[in-house]
Image 1 (cartoon, rainbow, N blue to C red):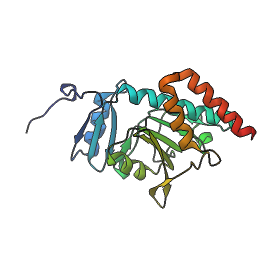
Image 2: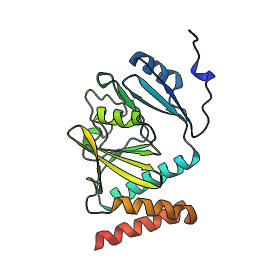
Image 3: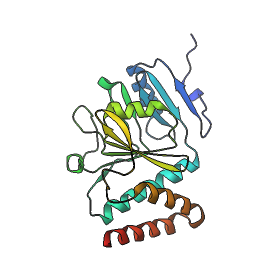
Image 4: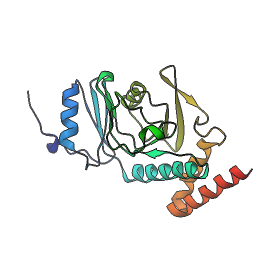
Length: 215
C-alpha cells in the first residue's frame, strides 16, 4: 500500500478530490494536518471525504451572497451571529462540513460569545450557504447535522432547501425571510454584479430591501 502526505497532493482550482473509506480518526487527522489557513474546503459523510479547491468566481459569489444576507438581517432588525466557514462535525453522525457562509439566527443568543463549537451540545447553524455544490456528499452531511435551511447557488440559480422530517425539500422561499422573493432577488443581484461591481450591487440591494419593507 502506498502512503502519501496531503502536502504531496496538488488539487487544481475548481477541481475536487474524493477519498473513500476514510475513518473518523483519519478525517480528524486530515483536518489537523491541513490546519485552518487553507483555501481548500472539506465535506465528510459516512466515510467519503471531498476536498475541493474553489475558483475565484466561487469566492466572489460567496462573499456577495453572505453580504446580502447580512444586509437582509440588518434592515429587518434580526439579530445573528456569523460563523463563516467554520468546520461543523459530529462523530456520532459520521459527518462534517465547512459551509461557504453560515449564520445563527434563531439560535443567535445561544451562540453569542462562543469561539469554540461542539455539536454534541451546540446547535447547528440556522442557515448555511454553499456555492456551486456538485457533490451529494455535502447534502448528506448537512442533513445528518440537521442544518434547518441550506441555500445552494448553482448554475446561476439559488435553490433553497429546508429540513423536513430529517430530509431536505426544495422551497420557493426562505423560512427565515418568508415575505421576500429571495431566490429572484439574489439571482438578479449576482447577475447585476458582473457589470456593476460589488459595492453598487450591494447598495442597490439594500435600497430594494428598504423599499420592500416600506411597502
